[in-house]
Each structure stands twice: as structure tokens, then as C-alpha cells.
Length: 469
Image (cartoon, rainbow, N blue to C red; front, side, top):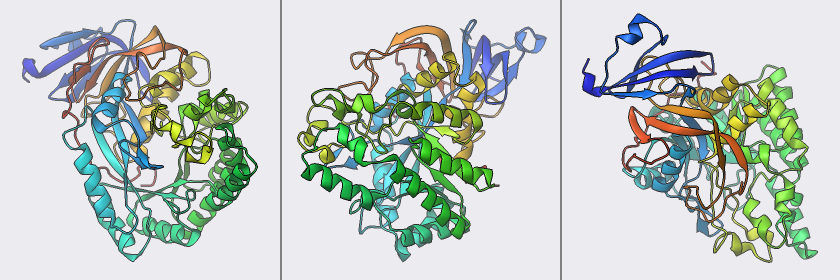
């Protein structure tokens, strides 16, 4: 082995979803070559061009964020992070793989949307990336295309029970897509809210003069998320198809997932940091400040947070992704002044997911290993990337983070690296911070300095869901 291509990380506590142990890690040619006890003769014999001292730190897998929307069209505008800025911000926070959503335009083929997303991303990413496919026009052509996409590594398809006239699919279309997924191995992802009912409540609220951002949360009722989740599960049962429900925000929706899993059904759930740390109190901030927190599913009353943390502990929720879909307050969120329904839906978060979840460890909500499970290993398994991504093992990509569990940081728009003019967590103090980040063995963050390069990130074709094999 060439010493020049080697890196050794010594003295850290290696934490994976399965184990935690003091260990040295050897990297060669962008892969993990070996993991060994730090006092072993084997590790002592390693020679390398560069060595990193991780004493007192964790060595963890790079994060896998399975739900982002970069350069995403919504509400007459586009999410403000490009593939260059979004993947760079992810690296700052210790996330080394993103799975973004390519969008099928209405009236066009899936391939048209996928090609457009490849064109946006190729050569513009600081870390590795993959794609899901949003199916917004279910017809015989797009159903046939689903088979072709699975064969080339786009193995998950998102449908919407919300947003009539934009992304919405009715129950018959959803059932057809689920049946196709059951046959080709693709995983159906669902935005579960009753869109037509929500539209009625929106119309009534605006007619009554209830136009402020807080009413966004009030009309998108928890019962309508729970009802849609129940219906999606029922349709998946009819189709004999696995189901992944995105951005679960409400205790009632979580209860539907827990019941299905207790019945042995292949049903999975994702939540996001905003639902664990923010609430309707933020939507109700005075003036128009609440617009910063408008996302769908919406923020819920604070009491839902405990149910979601419990769901993560009991494995009724398996993944924490960000649903990173940032819109600047000035000029974008402001489109909804006087009409909350025109506020672009989405929050920035890709940079802070790993740190917010580590705060969950500090606060006693989850264990260290569960932190890595929900942020790295399970999303990699769920979407066919494991063990290339999501763990620390010989042969895996050398996507690694030297993480300082004692570092203190204060989140702020003044210091974050996302391309958005506010922070959803402004002034929040966290314990823990990514110090050094490796992507396929390249140092992209070096002791809190960006050393990566746009164009380093590669597209990664995916296998099918590894929980279904």
C-alpha cells in the first residue's frame, strides 16, 4: 500500500449504529482500509502521509441526509440553496451524502425531470449525492419509466396526498404507483396530508381574515396528517407494497405508523429536527416572523415533541432527515404577506441536523448509537447505500467525521453556511460540533475550515431498500 495515499485517525471513540469502541482508523484510496484497537501492534505499525489526533473526540460515519430540496421549484420561486451551497453547508455539519428529489414536471416524462436534476448537480457538489424521483403525473408512461429508473439506481418514488394542482395524486394514482413499486422493488415515499380538505380550510380561514403565518399550522390539522397516513398505509396493504412516510410531525400520525408496524407491515417513518425542536410557538411569533417557520407538514404544538422522541427510541420512526428546502425571508417568504397560503413552504436545516440530534443525546432523548443509527446507518440501508455509506468498516467509503462532543456553538444566520438569510434556530446553544470531515478520504472540513472543492461530490446510484431483502 502506498503511504502517500493513506490517512490514519488515532485515539478517537469510534461510534457506529452497532458499537462504540476506542479505535484507530486507516484510510487508503478513499476507502476505510482497517479499524483496530489503538494499543494493538497492528495499528501501531500503520504508516501514513497524514495522521489525525482524535483523542477526546468521537469518530463517526458521515451523515446521510435522505431528504433535501436544492434548487427546488415551489410557490413561484426556487429554494435558495444551490447544489454547490447546499452540499457545502452539509459538509460543514458533518453530512457527507445527500439524497435530493428530482421532480417530474406535469405533462412530461420522469426522465425529463431526472435529466434536469443531473444537469443541476453534476460538477457542482462538494459531497456525494443521489436522487429520489417525485412522480407528479401518474400515467402509463411514467409507471413504465419507474421500472427503468429502479434498474439504474433511482430506487424510490415520492407521491403527494397534498398540494392539489401541483404535486397531488389521487388514491387511484397512488395505488397504481404502489402496485408498480411492489413489482419493481422501488420504495414509495409519501407526503401524507389530506390536501383537498386542507384547501377547504385554507379558503375558509382567508375568507374570515385569518391571514397570519400561524394559521398555516392551524389549517393543516394533525388529524388530516393522521387520516392521510392511515389511508396511505391501507393503500400500501392493498398493493402489497412497502411504504415510507416522510416528515412525520404529529403524534396522531405516528400512532398510525406504530399500529401498522405492530401488525408486522413494512411501513417506515421519518421525522425532521424542526419537529423535535420547534413548535407552533414559532409560527405565532409577532409581526410576520412566523413566516420563517412555515413548512409542510407544519410545526405542531410543543407536546408532540415528546411523542416523536419516543418514536425514535422505540423504532416506530427510523430516520431523521431535514427536508431542507430554504427560502429567504426577504423576497421569498415575504410573498405571503397578507396571505399565509402564499408563503413558500420550507425550512433550512441541512447544516445542523447532526448537531441537533447530538443535542438529543446530551439531553437524554437518545443514545449515541441511536444518534448514528437514525442519522447515518438507517437512511443508508433504507435507500440502498449501505455499507458503502453510513458506517465505519473496511471497504466502506471513507466518509468520516471527527466530532467534538464537548464543543459549544450558538446557531445563527451570521455564522451558518446555508444560502439563506435567517436561521430557524437563531441563538440556540448546542453542545457538540463536527471538527474535521472526510468525504471519500478527502478532507473537506479541516478543524472548522472549509478545504473541500465544488465538483468533488459524485453521483451515487442506489440499490433497493435493504430492509426488504
